[in-house]
Length: 108
Image 1 (cartoon, rainbow, N blue to C red):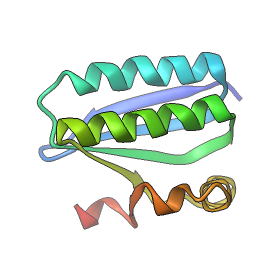
Image 2: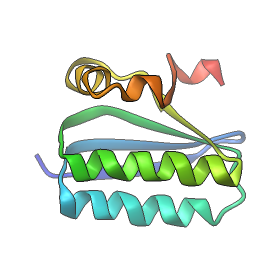
Image 3: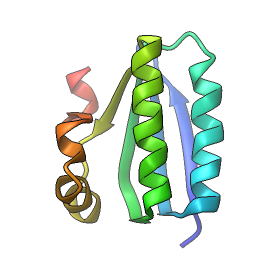
Image 4: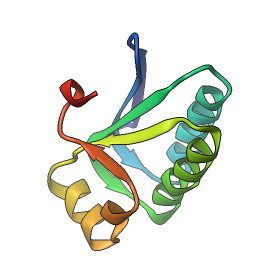
């Protein structure tokens, strides 16, 4: 499955949907997109990982880096609560204790 990223802006948040596998090359694409978002006047960014079938440690590291960066910039960096593989991976890596999650976009 090829990697895809879609970014949409609503009135009070920016939504980033990801599909496929995030390995080093694709993590670099995610990093570039998130870097662009860090330079905009955004209050909240929501990441949807439910379409991700695999992510390597470099990909996870990108999210840890941006969690710190956005926090320093005063931007809320949230994840839409993932299912399956991503939920298990985030729980096993204890990132569920670091990142903030919402159940659905209605929670914003």
